[in-house]
Amino acid sequence: MFTCVRCSDTPVSLLLSSGCEDIIAEAMTIDSLPSVLHWSSKPHGSAWVHRQALQFLREEFSQLVQPCHLPVLYELSHDYLVDAVSSDFLQVSSSCFPVDMSHSTAELNF
Image (cartoon, rainbow, N blue to C red; front, side, top):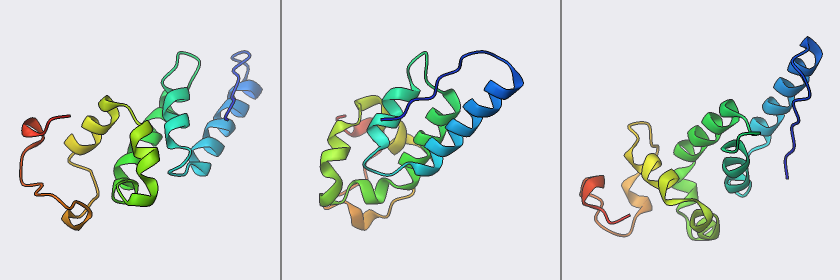
């Protein structure tokens, strides 16, 4: 899906790889999130893009739990979901969940 190759550490190649990372982060959607998280977590991926993808997950979590996006939610790893719901920066309203979410994350069976 996304490919950003770092050929060398010359100023031009660093500028190009930075531009690639910006494009990937700006083009991220709920549907592309699993692929971006997977690629960015690899040794040849980008730590910055990975942080942006995790932030995107927290910001768009309320959309991700909607029925139309459940297939994407199921593609995400357990660790990403635990990280998201454990975050103080998660943006979601209680109306997104049909169950009682008054339990702490430690009590939930992830």
